[in-house]
Length: 419
Image (cartoon, rainbow, N blue to C red; front, side, top):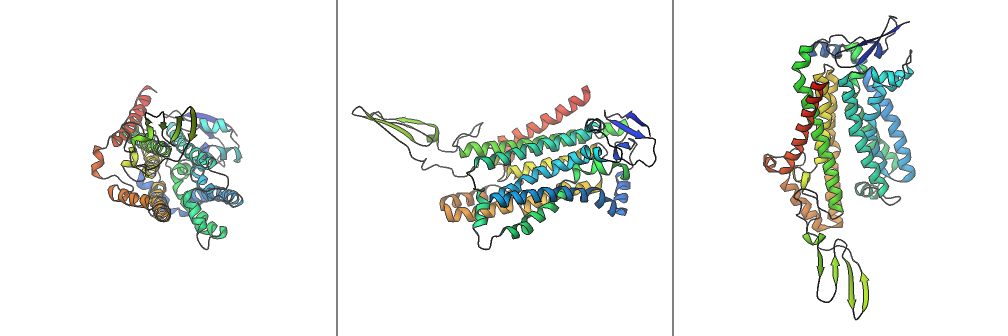
């Protein structure tokens, strides 16, 4: 058998075999693809192929991750370990489908060779899911490590205290359903690497079509940049709020006393936060401290948290929406890939995400801090949960996020023009 290298307009390389029995995905030639309607007919007529090529491999990877996470969570009594599979699922599915599985094929291909064979749009999708998944994985893991040993995040602590809690029920009620959701959400980062040979949804050779769809590629990069920016800002601003610091540009609805120093005529100096105090009386020094009191704001409502109540979930939705758009711009889109952002949105809005988060917070605040519950209820009346209302057009943070997205789209167009 002879393996020949060919190139394509996107900068990728295809390795075409002269052996007709070799149906290795890497061996497919980069030929012109049919219309989207043709791809739709192929998808509808071959449901078994779709399940075998996309869902089953994803289910296998996600089930393995869930089994490992469940074992660790049960041994450490930390349900938060489950959250690690959300970034790892799509990330590992994408890299396995695009690169790693070729090393175990009938005719093995090295990892560098498999990666080199990817075209530029495929590499963009892979880079995007890696950047998003890597950041989220680091965020969840670092948050876990900062907690005291054996402590879970507040929502899970409240769940474990409920009557009838058992780890066996948690496996069937939480872990198992999330395996299915993750497999659907991973479709946009799996299908371009698995269905290209069979469905014909591979990269279009026509430079005219490429030019016409340049706007879609720029828009996809812009959406991804907006979403990732919103997620990063949301996490950063929430951390600073919890530490009693400002959130950045124009912050300051919290008590200004949090960052003031007060000194009176008796030589007593107070520095907040944490009210450290040093007093000098009759030549003697007495030091004492107490917790910060009477803080004006108990819930972060500024920055991107003033746009919607769940800016991190909105950012996540934009990131996942950008993947099918990138596939469309590169003629890699198959109809089943559209299920990814749809499943992600449904889960964030109506299954897990903000629905579970707000229910847990309302219940916890009611029993632990009534004033915080009152403030939370006011926040819910003033801001939408997921999608911004029209008044947010006057919010400077809205334009900061949009500006970052526009910068990402322009940068992508500039790089494409240079390359």
